[in-house]
Image (cartoon, rainbow, N blue to C red; front, side, top):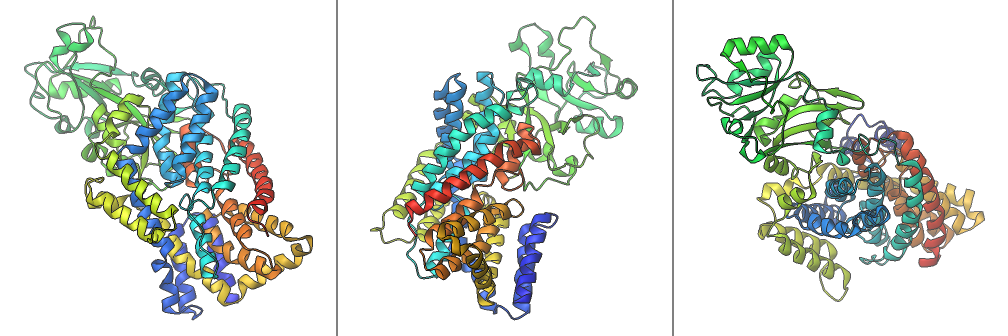
Amino acid sequence: MIITILTLIFSATFFAWGKIRSDVVALIALVVLSVSGILTTEESLSGFSNSIVIMMIGLFVVGGAIFQTGLAKMIGARLLNLAGNSELKLFLLVVGVTSIIGAFVSNTGTVALMLPIVVSIAKSAGIGTSRFLMPLAFASSMGGMMTLIGTPPNLVIDETLVNAGFERLTFFSFLPAGIVCLTIGTLLLIPLSKWFLRKDNSTSKSSTGSKSIAQLVEEYDLNANMQRILVPRNSIAVGKTIGELHIRSRYNLVAFEVRSSESRQGKLLGNITQKSANANTKLEENDAIFISGEANDINRFMKDYALVYAPNDDKQKELAFYDIGIAEIVLMPSSRIVNRSIADVGFRTHYNVNVIGVRRKSQYLRGNLANETIHTEDVLLVQGSWKNIGELSKETKDWVVLGQPLEEVSRVTLNHKAPIAALIMLAMIVTMVFDFIPVSPVISVITAATLMVLTGCFRNVEAAYKTINWESVVLIGAMMPLSMALEKTGVSHFVSQTLVDSLGNWGPLALMAGIYFTTSLMTMFISNTATAVLLAPIALQSALSLGVNPVPFLFAVSFGASLCFASPFSTPPNALVMPAGQYTFMDYIKVGVPLQFILGIVMIFVLPLIFPF
């Protein structure tokens, strides 16, 4: 028992510390329990063959196909357009659409999907998006409480019940309690977000999505030290590429774009031909290069390549955005590019876009970015063709693209495979909802995931594998044997008996409240999935010790683990919207604490009504 308790303390401590990946911590705990002889080899590896883990893998693929085909984005954009310019309507539609999508796919993926749509529509309505992004994250968590597959803790408590010999939960067992949660949560978020999330600068810099291109240019001061350099006929730069000029590495300059001579034949916008200043962009006679940097460096560059300044009377001296554009990207919490240099990531090589600015809290970085190390909360300003920025928006595993017009977002993501993805997802849900169909839920999910690949909803099989969050899969697979060890060594019984002895005399309602808020408190420091895995068997034992129905106790664990809003780091969606909305930790305290506490009180009284003791 001592080794198990120490392993549990070790896991909880390092989960909260966050310096070591959670899946690695879980694997270390698994190794300790196995080597110490508490678990057999078969018991140690049983989590990775568990149906809940297999089902999660399939759900990641199904959800990824919905994103890849543009199905969810298309539906979400059309529904949100119904809001018009009404702030209240837009708020209700953001919460409603997000929660519906979140009921069927992961909450992190839901926020990644909805974030660019919401900021685009808020921009067109002239409303600061800080009013919507935190409710967007919270709505994805509340929506996940309406179905069995909405969030991993739901699957965890279902597995706990089945292993204990109880009847399996149905697909919509969570729906009644989930609707109550969503209704109360929405009613609370309306005043809370209005009181605490309406910033004075909401129309300018409070939200990435509400900025126009002109505002981005002004905010990042892109026109500072901007010079328009012409490539004359006798220049040795003619026929060379931007990469061959070593503009950034040798001269410490930033090249933004190249305009062809056609732009000087007239003043109409349509006459301007732009090219991104990528490494493979070839210069021709009379091309104009837009360069920013120190005057001495610019003069040295011009002298080496026999370049000249553009005429002083030329009106086109500032950046324009016709063929090429700019957009900000926000990093995902688990982004693989964090702690890597911008040059190492290879935005130019892999995505044909340039990183021309970095917003790091209140600091703006522009020059000599190649060797700049990317931090977790950085917002990157990229430049490239609108098509390439659209392609960049498809890489939702590492970042989310902001600032694109809604029409561009819809055009890029819309795909002819969307109807096929919709039919497959609908068929999966039908087989899981109706008990008379003789197909188990895990087989339904795996079949749907396989069909998504076979019918071409992914570009290739590798793209399907990339949608799987392997960190979450390994975390759950490695943590499940720990819950087995807790039961095997008597720790679960000891903790549950302690809860029963301290709260049992006050009745099952008080005991369930203790479990709920214990779960809610732990989730502020470790992941909701890990919390559910640890506390589900304890909740089960507590209910059985008191001789009451364990179902409401396990639902308390699931709701307590999923409805954690008081910290930006308690769930990935909370962390994802933090830089985009420029929220502070206190913003989450102001909005999240009352929301989390009141919802907890409500659910403590509602769950026994739906699932009697």
